[in-house]
Length: 381
Image (tube, rainbow, N blue to C red; front, side, top):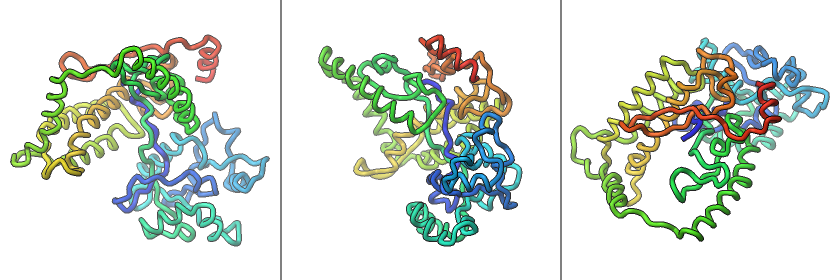
């Protein structure tokens, strides 16, 4: 796997009730004038505007409102800064004691009643899905009261390393169209990037795969590999009667909490090292996972099968985050707040399994960057 430290956090997800924690709250709320406030009622995003975006961002909420209502001379409100910056700002407010009761901040669209007379109807018309989502799931009428929101995991920007021409992975016949594999977008995860990945690299992978099959056939699998995979898959069902067995959901929750606490938005060396060791402990625990029931529609069994892959991705993310000693894109190291130019022209990580089964990290340069593009990259940092 490659570049697994880059994880995008969508800045606004539901934080209450627990049953819907993490459910996305569209950026459209902020686009329609939604204000992010802390427990003191302060629109904190206006207090920390990065110099790079200062000329694009409103100085005051009043100017931001003019932008929302179509004034071409106005600049966008601070709530519409980049996702990584907004997410970090929310985490700062919470960590410094200015968060909402359930560990987030307040997203207030109801305030626009101060600006327009038919605010309730306007909000319902512009944001129907959000109105129903909060009304049905949280009992909140967003036309009258603020929402509680906080950052939630959105995209993993790394992935399987592939050949840039064919999009084929190191596993013959396995193709992938992804941002990190292509090396085009790196840590810059935007909606438009997904479109190019699907259309450009997806087509490239499909065309090459078709030729691969025509030339070599669909291939064959060693029957012994199939047998080993069957034994591994059935193991959780065979442990039902063991007293020392572990519930797969319990282990999944432990992993989620661990990653949120120690491999989240703000990272540092000591907690990343702790996380890496604790993930190894969870890998050992996974050997004792057991589920009840049969193979017929058994979500517990499906979760047990997923755990191996969840733990592999978690370990890759923690190791990658530890290896990249800088803050870049969506990767934030509190102990290395600046960008180090020496790491720029590198995929931080090529990940592989070492001989003893541990995850090993290898830095590799980004190949074939045109000199003119490289110059622009270095100038912009």
